[in-house]
Image (cartoon, rainbow, N blue to C red; front, side, top):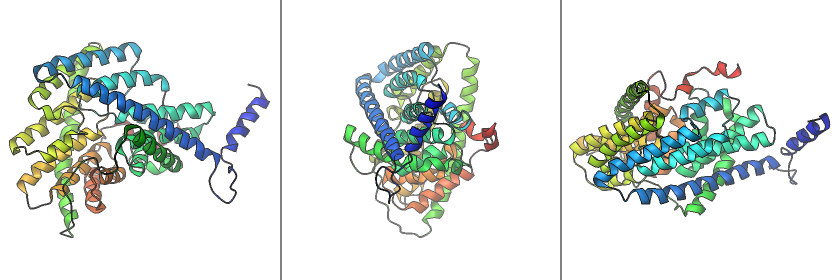
Length: 427
């Protein structure tokens, strides 16, 4: 490209920051870019969700003993997709690319991620669609940035805005989704990505509206917790205690997952064999405990509305943790945020059995907040997300539980890329 062409391209990019016609306002052309990214993210998430629901209803036909060969076959097919098309990576790789690869997510991994995750999630694996959606929408931001020859923080911001649009589409909380996209990158240095806050908010808002229209999403909480009223001004102290219990379970999940990572690494076979084996184990768990199937989006309401014995709740808690660990380590694709909320809800119900005088909504939401903050290290966004998802509008207990999980989390984070020092980013 000659000098004149480069100068013209730079001039076009600079015009994005110029006001459209209203000189008295901050509104500029780059707002339209962020809005366009959010619209694309909302459409992508909406289409993904429609296909996911279609496949889920079809595969859900296989129940009883049939669930074991069904999940084994879906694991095998998803593994073959990854083996022949390419490994799309996991949350660790996504965070690593944003922080240390100049803010780029490669769109070439999207076909493999979409196909493999659709099979894994719809078959009933204990991982949700949030990670695949974030990968696809984030890489769309990278693609737009490359198209406009953006570099540095401008490119990174557009990628993060794309990620936020994916988070928001699934969770239905533009502010929470935007903060989560920043906070998941590094729990101590989220402010390093402050330039992405406004782009993320704009993209998230447009994504939320488009996704809601496409899937005809209702307005209101996703999970129907009992009504909570502040009776005791020291409810935040209960939230801390419940958060400590949930953090302990979070530690169990983390080290259980590390154990299975070591086991599956010792099995030197192609990934489709590992995923098939993982499918068999998951199928056995689902056969005995059907409520552990899928990632928990609808199953959390089942837990809350139906009456399970204390012994059965303990079994669900143990085998759901096992199912998430197997799903993650055997190569199945998806995200673990909503499955962790399911674990937290189960623990909250168990605690309520022992302390029935405490409001059930308080025990559940405290445990959900603490375990997610412990594993993902995202206390701010977890607080906002749970408030939107549960309708629990009194922030303080959720915040205290989230901070408890965050500060009592293991020193080495579950998402390894969060461990690296921020100074490495400049190398």
